[in-house]
Image (cartoon, rainbow, N blue to C red):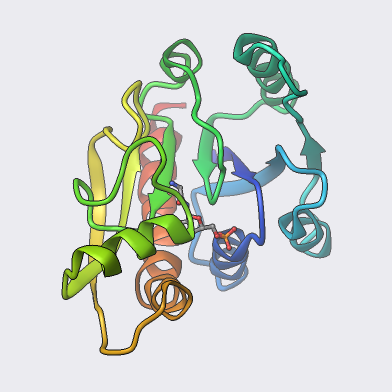
Length: 201
Ligand code: GAR
């Protein structure tokens, strides 16, 4: 039995690509990348999914729309696709505690810092790296964690440290953190959690 995984994305989808590449190398034996859902219809991640033969869905939150209404649509898409586990891979929206409580220990997220540094509401994408550089830390990294009702507050699954180098910009640092940490950690954590869930099916 494999765990049916939906990957939630908003942008470029390099973490999605890392999951696809791991799958193609046979490194995700307990998980099936069953669906990619984007809350941005122009996300390049959608093209990556199509190229990899993974079904896609777009779930937009309209301007001024209540989060519950958006989440009800998202939940319907996930249910219709029999999804067991969610991976937030650059998904730039915070899910409500009601939504999250439907998937206890079944949602994981990749965050581009060593939690509890530079995390929580307002810390996403390049902003995280800018904050690390502004603070002057010499080491940063990435974290994969379970998602609970606290933004970036769920139980940590794995972390990897990455050096900050003289002359780094948010962009150079983001790239190094992705290459050395995120793209390595996320597929490993996905397989670990998928394996646990597959055992319970
Ligand atoms: C990644 O660095 C991911 O860790 C970060 O956004 C980027 C998405 O890139 N996520 C967050 O900041 C969430 N708080 P990608 O679309 O190329 O995977």
